[in-house]
Length: 527
Image 1: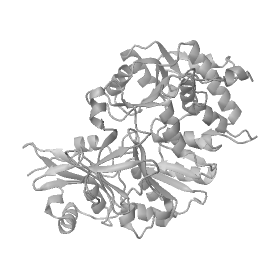
Image 2: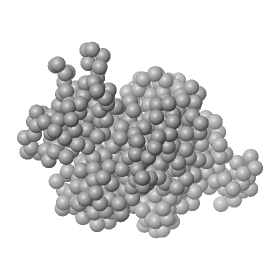
Image 3: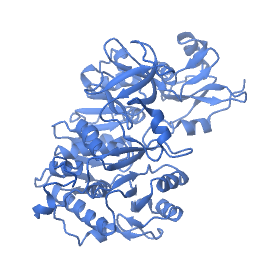
Image 4: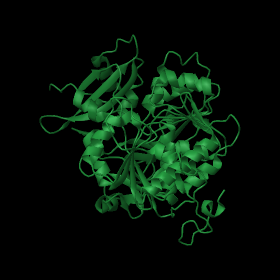
C-alpha cells in the first residue's frame, strides 16, 4: 500500500486533518472475510477486496478525464454494484454527484443535467436509449458507460469499466474538504427551475451516515432506487461491515423470496410498497424470521395498514420522518408499534437528538402544543441551501429554521404528527380537507386496500376532492358506500366529489403515489 497516497497528514489541505470523507469510512468498514459478499446483485457476489479495487480504479480513470473538486458528475444509473462504486469514486475525488431519477421525463432530466452544469455523464448500459437522448440534448465534456451496451443499442461514450481495468487499485487519498459539495439531490424539477438541494461532505458524514451507522451488522435489501434514500441506507450498511442485496426493480414476490434466501435483516420501503409486500399471497408462507427492522417513510402511511403489518410480521417496524432539506427529524421505534394503538401509529414519533421543531402559523409565529401549523426544523444537519436558487433558499431557511412545507402538530409528549403537505391540502367551501386524514379514514373500511386523495381544480377555479381507491379482492365496495362512510364519520366537507376505483395506484420512481398522474387520469366532477 502506498501509505503517503492513502492517508496524507492533512488530506483536505485546509488544516483539518481530522476530517475523513464518508467514502473512506464506508470502505474501511467493509469486512474482508472469505466467502462474504458486501454487494449482491442476482448471481453476482462482490467481496470487499473486489469492491474496493473497483472504486479505486474507477476513481483513477475518472481523474484522468478531469473529474475533480468542484465538478458535477450526473448519474443515470439503476441498482447495480457499479452505481455504488462510481458514486464513491466521484466523491473520493472531491467532485459531487447528481443522481437522476430514472422515470422522470427526458425533458425534466435534461433540464436538471444542464442546471447542475454536468461535466461528466455516466450511464447504466440498461438505460442506453435514454442516455443517448440526454447526451444529445445536453452537451457535456465526457459521456461514459458502466460497461458495454447491447446489440442494437445506440452508440454512447467510452466504456468506463474498460478504462478502469488497467488502473492501479492501490488506496487513493480523498481530495474532498468538509465544506465541499458532496451531492445535489433534486426533490422537484417537474416545473420551472429545478429544486436542487445542496449537501456538503460534512453534512453527508454527520447527518446521513452518522444516523445510519448502528454498530450492528446488517443484511440490507435495497429494492427502491439508489438515487433516493435507499442509497444512503446502503452506505450505513456497508460502513458497519454488512451486506447490501440489490434489486433492480420492485417486485413484492421477489422481495419475500430474497428475504428468505439471503436472510435479510433490514429493508427500507415506502408505505405503498410495504402494502404490496403485505398483500402478496406468499407473505404468510415465507420464512421472514431473519427480519430485524423494516423502516418505512417518505410518504404518509395508514395506521390501519401498519397495524395489520405489525400483526403479520411482528414489531420489526420503524417509521422515520425527515426531508433532504432538514435531515432526519423524528422516529417512531419498533417498541412503540402497538397494533392496538392507532393513535401512536398516526404519529411520526419523538424528535431525534439534536433536532428542534416548532409548529408555526402563516405569520411564522410559534403555535402552542397541539395546534396545527407548518413544521419548522432547526438542526446542525440542515441543508446548505438550494442549487443556484438564493431566493428559494432564503424563503425556506428563514432565521435558521427549515420551513418544511409540511403541516403537523406536536403533542404534550413531544410526539410529532404529520398531517399533510401544504400544497396538497385541498381548500373547499367551509375550510380545508387534509388529504392524509381522509386517506387514513378511507382505510378503515374493510373493502379498501389502498387509496390516494387529491384535489382537482374545477371549471370555476375551486378544487374538488377526488379519491382513487384500490379495493380488496372480492370486495363489492361502492363509491356511494364510501361517501356515506365519510359523511357520517368526517362530515360533509370531507365527502369526495369523485371516487375512482383502480387495480393499482400509479407510483413515482421512489414509490410514492403519483398524484400528478392520478389527476391526469381522474374522472371529471359532474356537478
